[in-house]
Image 1 (spheres, helix red, strand yellow):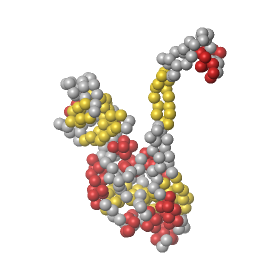
Image 2 (image 1 turned 180 degrees about the vertical axis):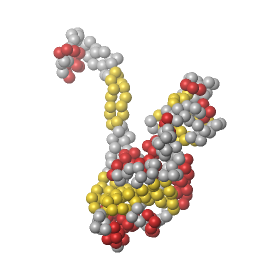
Image 3 (image 1 turned 30 degrees about the horizontal axis):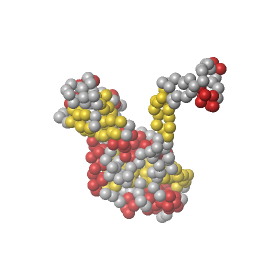
Image 4 (image 1 turned 90 degrees about the horizontal axis):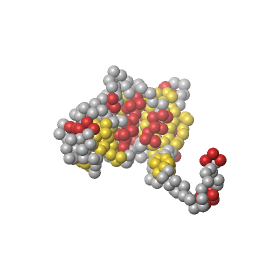
Length: 333
């Protein structure tokens, strides 16, 4: 279970792996996959052959070796290759899920959860569901008493997302429905009941009036759009019944940190840089090399950093004195 619903239950990371669990197999930082554990299952990758039976009873986070060559259970080195068995979290799930659509990643998701002001017990409406990347993080933020209602106009996408949520133990937190929110709006049953609304639609301005009637007073709306022209039209639609309208673009810069050997230098070369500090100054003859075996931890920007993903526009539901007046303002915009 990705999110513990009962405070008396241990988090997934503290349990032992059992048949039916979803495990994130970590090969390296850029190579992970989700695997459902079975009694006779086998995983084969470039590091060797891994039998699911060898995983049973281990703690999440364990390092397991390939079974090629025999043995390999409970930490005994066998084939030489190894992987780590990680507990599924919303962050890891975002990296290993099946991409049915373009998804939001951690940088954008973290800002969405923070600016929607989500706490346990909140009610959130989302359109569209897509691959369910954001939905899992929304569910964890509102657990255990809250609820996420997510809508997608595509039948198969909605069905596939529902299966994923059931597999991750999130069915009690997430309700998936098929509905064209741009054309039909949110269901009337949610009118004035939502604490937050998230829109990931090609024409979000068509759904903003419905989002306004669905949100409680002082609730927060977020719209994700890849193009600035979409943002402009969405902001124009928000002006009638929303305030505090703000747009962000999150650009995450990651660094590669590794240990490496320092370049050797002669005394003459070092003199060109500057003299050594007084306490560390040593007399060396001309041409004598410094110790080239010294290592140091180095950091540099990754050459494959993710660039533009989209724009996040947030707005707060205006308070016009009464719910009826505010609802009328949004519905007639």
